[in-house]
Length: 141
Image (cartoon, rainbow, N blue to C red; front, side):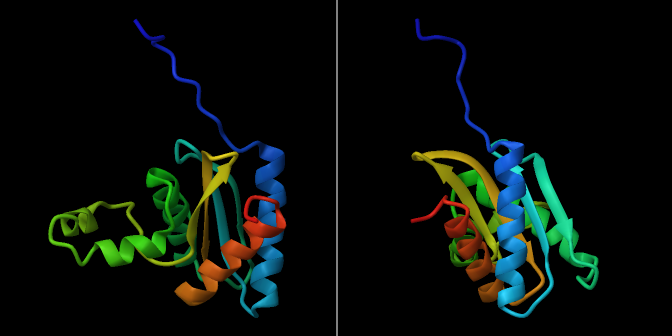
């Protein structure tokens, strides 16, 4: 019998806070204030920040983008394309699924350790800022 225990990896608080700082810089470089959420591999909030001028709706959107990215280990912009498929479209009614660009899974050594979600710019700006933050924090090459 295999072990009944599965070991999971998760982003550390220190790494989440460093990624948050990089995301803030990436958004500022693109000219927008944002809300940034970082979740662990289980989708639980690990680090969070809302810029003073970011609309309050961006709070739930950023958290749900991070959660969605971590749930399947893929970027939220991919979900937008999947929603067009009739076999996947029913997932659109899930209350936390956020199929809008700006959420990216966080991987370390090939293992899912969390997700980042950014909301405040366009979906393209949010996605690009998340990519840049991950790159600067050493999660993307």
